[in-house]
Length: 440
Image 1 (tube, rainbow, N blue to C red):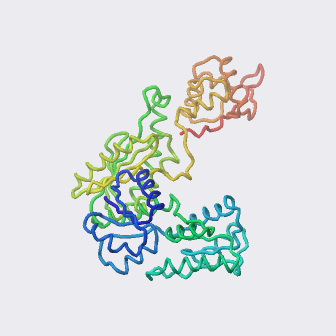
Image 2: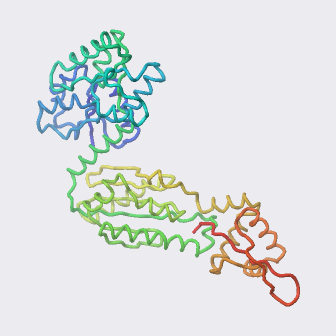
Image 3: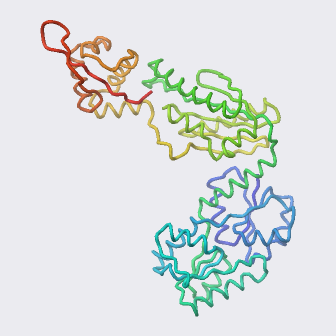
């Protein structure tokens, strides 16, 4: 996909860097202008040469839209509150000005009032001035400059906020205190994603077959889990439950290729609706909640099921290049989206082995000893034992087991719940209850 970014100097430099960093598979071009009323004429030479045009602001977009129809897929970076947060911080902490006395264009009063309420600052109507948004008029920049200049000279304002780079440079030359409201990186990223998805939606059929390839990362050769079939199967059963749940949500057909590889056949429309056009690959989150095994998802589009399957495998290769859970999408036209990550709100997981090593560090026991004891407890189906019972199933002496139990008790992984006479003679035996390690 080729996107043309249209805007003045400073914001173009920023969005090109953001695009290169976050969307390496998008071919980027740019049109830099001095006056946005020139944009309709300047864009003529790009007709048929780009797939989409993204304007860095609403004013040039609206001005262009009024004069050009059916040029190409077009959009603009919206005005967002996060941009204003940054601007207000700059005015307060860098310029040391009072944010209760401002002259503002581009943004409306309702947004500022809402923002001030959230940050607990009093909004004083009599000291806040907002320019009328006349961005369809050719002399809009001149109007904005006169508006800010008048407020600075006659209304005792401290600083101006503008979303127009042309106005910003003009006010700087006249030594009028001003801050340029450049869009934040997050807003830019979301805007590029949105226009990318609109472009892809135009290129693909709603009911075409889409294939999801899912691969579970097998334990390494020296992993503690690999030594135990039960641990691996326990993980796999929980993952299968999540896979079948997701499969039912997208009305798909799930095929088990092997113990660690799965494939789901569904349709484009259902999958994109369920994942909010891939903004929420919640299957990764579902698996992450129950599994310590890394999961990779490849999503493939194609004119045929076979082509979609091929693209799914191509995308899963890219997903596997990531260190942790990830997904990629390869579309029918060869466009690539990714990496798509789990929701950052979901708690980061440690690997299976790391959990044992953490317990080993806390108790002073070896990881293998911790694993062996816990594994035997799980396989027995019980949670309460005497020291002798546990020594027998673990194949160690009672004295050795007593030392292990002492360490586990000191670290809070087991507790003495009662005592019981096992024979007529001798001291009563302790009944020990082991607390779940939450590993499976």
